[in-house]
Image (cartoon, rainbow, N blue to C red):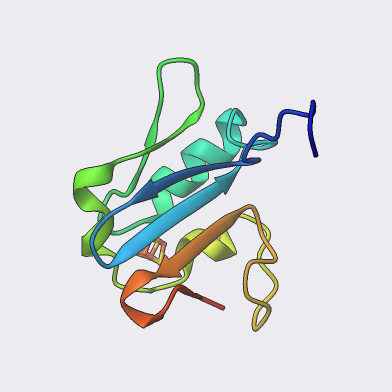
Length: 98
Ligand code: SF4
């Protein structure tokens, strides 16, 4: 719409095979950042300076699709993209890990 600036409501980082998105509304949540950092076995999430979620781009393609970050961020099993974190399989036409 003209005159209205649209902003992507998600923080996103892309590797070659995997992209990760975090809902902006919770990206500053320190508790969530700690849960994600502790959950991910390949260190894709870090705790930023201000206690916000940070994505570690160099590790994105190490994702093993374990879903632990989804469990840590309010995902409902079987419903792709229902939580604050989305794992996007770029190698699979952008399918979202459910
Ligand atoms: S699915 Fe597993 S490996 Fe991939 S980002 Fe989430 S916690 Fe890390």
